[in-house]
Image (cartoon, rainbow, N blue to C red; front, side, top):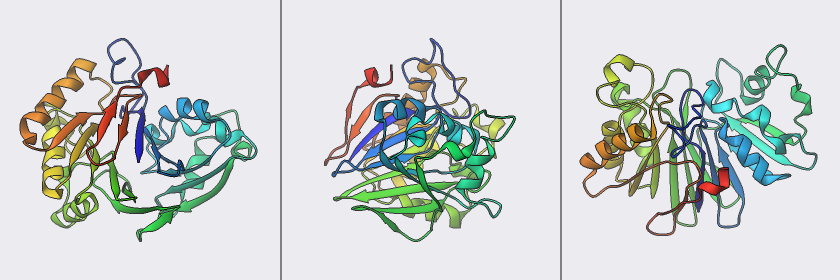
Length: 284
């Protein structure tokens, strides 16, 4: 199983010299299974560069929720406009509507010039089930996490490897019952990618916004027995140095837990002990 980060930022894109190391695009992760089949998680602005690298393709897109930073790249995902692409989209039911409705809403006049009917490469829209389901040889499981609006975390297991994606989650604000379900989703995962948007000093002013600190992410990972924690969903106001400082904050609490910070272009291989390959040229 191979993971590549195409967008690691939260809330709004933040390009510029102070974010060039960890990237300014919003949430998007590419997951390649052992048979090279493609799963994409979230469609923030990072999906544009991913699409440019693909051309016509067959893929499954898993959406966690419909906040702009997780869907705003979809109208710029080139494979969705290419005849012969087969892109299946899953997302949560929200206000009685599924992903087809919410993705099309952002493309209506006057917000966007292309009409949703031009997405000829999208073959199907589905509401994500809460029962485990198969994507090829992989088993996918979803669970609701602690974030405003209906928001999902995903667990993907294949060939003995497991990856858990929890992009937007406020650990300290979860009810005990909800927290136990989130811990169960992450239980024993090889890699947990988790929100760590705020420092401890920033958090009191953002309580209830649906985001965590490195302390919270480490706490969740330790309780779930995760092998490797990746900090994600970096605040748009944070420079590369501030992101690294949050990573150091997390490492000071992690003990034996392996911890890294997501950077655009990095590739994480899960084959026994997860290893990181620097591949920033892929997003230039």
